[in-house]
Length: 75
Image (tube, rainbow, N blue to C red; front, side, top):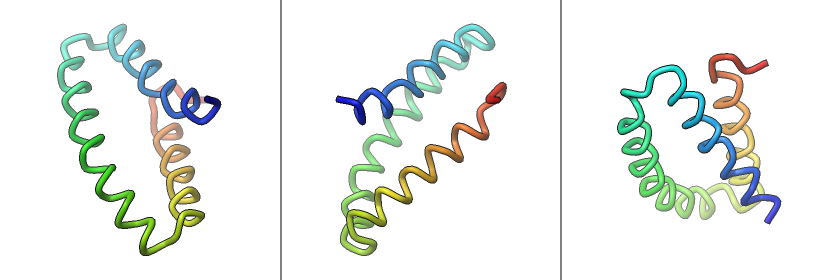
């Protein structure tokens, strides 16, 4: 449950912030999320074979931190 909460909150919080700033972009956010969900499932399986599970988790954590740092207003 803690990992699910940590992975699910950025999308919900991002949607909230986007809705406040530019609500016209909400359909794009949902579409990009759907596409990324499909691609990431396949990519995660391929990377797990190549990098191993630990390497995949480290890469995932690094990408989450990169996304957080690039979010406007992240302090």
